[in-house]
Amino acid sequence: MIDFITTYAPQLIVAGLKYTIPLALISFAFALVFAGFVGVFRSYDPQVTGFKKVLWFILNNLLAFYVWAFRSTPMLVQLFVVFYGLPKLGIEWLQPSAWVAAIAVLSLNSGAYASEAIRAAISSIPGTQREAAQALGMTEGQTFTRIILPQAARVSIPTLANSFISLIKDTSLASTVTIVEMFYLSQQMAAVTFEPLQMYLLVAAIYAIFVTILSIPQRYIQRWADRFVK
Amino acid sequence: MLKLEHVNKIYKEHQALNDINVTFNPNETTVIVGPSGSGKSTLLRSLNLLEHPENGMYTLDDRTIDYSKPVSKDTLLWIRHKTGMVFQQPRMFDHLTVMGNMIEAPVHVLKQSKAEAIEHGHELLQAVGLDDTADRYPYQLSGGQTQRIAIARALAMHPDYLLLDEPTSALDPEIEAQILRILKRLAEKHESMIIVTHNMEFAKNAADRMLFLEDGAIDFDGTPDEFFNHPTERIDRFLNAYKI
Image 1 (cartoon, each protein chain N blue to C red):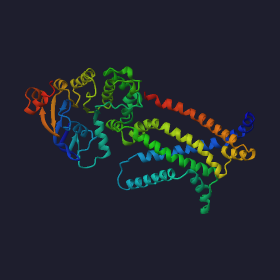
Image 2 (cartoon, helix red, strand yellow; image 1 turned 120 degrees about the horizontal axis):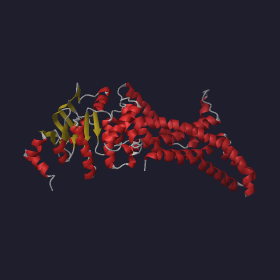
Image 3 (cartoon, rainbow over the protein chains, first blue to last red; image 1 turned 90 degrees about the vertical axis):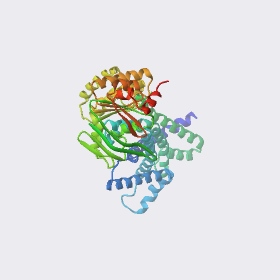
Image 4 (spheres, rainbow over the protein chains, first blue to last red; image 1 turned 180 degrees about the horizontal axis):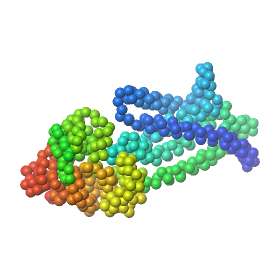
């Protein structure tokens, strides 16, 4: 057993450091950007009229469609559509490499969920905070960015951390689009060694270790964000 | 000067304000009393446009707005700047320290420098006896303390009119007295204040003028002496309800 671990664990960890972790970190960075934009946009009522209102309405619905589409289909299917499907359109710039396809799908998918977390966090801040800010003469924009968002950010941290953890594990799906990340490598090695139980338990343990280590910052971020609550 | 003419506010089946005509004079303390649901808060909130009546005219200094029309952003912010509001429940910005709360609007609305706002903030906190709490977060304060800070925060904007919506209803009598003493001091300095309250002692002591509201209409508009010493039959009944 010890022999098995010392033989195979290093290769798996290297694959993890080269593929799993970068995939997760890069995708989550993009996911946060998407989620921030979509979550804020869909929470914000700009109180405009005329053409701007039409534009806002259309964009708002497009974003709602994006969230709906990515939340109601399996990520594996999304990955196949992007990596195997899109190239068949024959459009030159739509021939994503495995990396681009994986990062695009992981971040768009995670971003769709995370945007809802941000939206929920924003709507959890009581309307009385908004009234208090406006009674002091703050504009809608100031109220939103200076009073609502900082408080909503704190509320959204646990849910966003959850999304991140899911994302780390979801990188294993990249194995289906030819990326030899940790799980793909474990499959190959299981086939050679005829030890699927030990091999898959080993890779599971390494995932668990990665997730545990990558979750540590959450504790500190949360502690900092909780400075103004009991 | 602050003036409402023929103001009506209608919620679904309920007329919250019914043809309100009233002028609030500067440098006076006006106390608004009346039974619950009589429209006192709605009236007060209409004065800084947190509430938007269906129709009527509102004049503040040289600007007049027609409630039946949309208000420009510029006018809205101007009115909010001229009027300060203190709510029944203190509404601290929970993510900011006490000083953060004090300087937020002076810095970002009045564009004061941070140093200037902090200096002024300390003065106002001293005036309400809470300068030692400047670095604390709102959760570390009691309800009475936060309400005193809410008053100081509103004053930091130098409003021409300070509006207070039952500022002591959520507090116990001892703390209530503390707050009312602060307000009485302001009244004696001839700040322009409009206060909705259920505290008749305070009204008797601090008001320059009394308004009695019932069913969204002004039923009495006069001096505290008239109100308390020569009440109409209806007001007499209202005042008697406070006696046990």
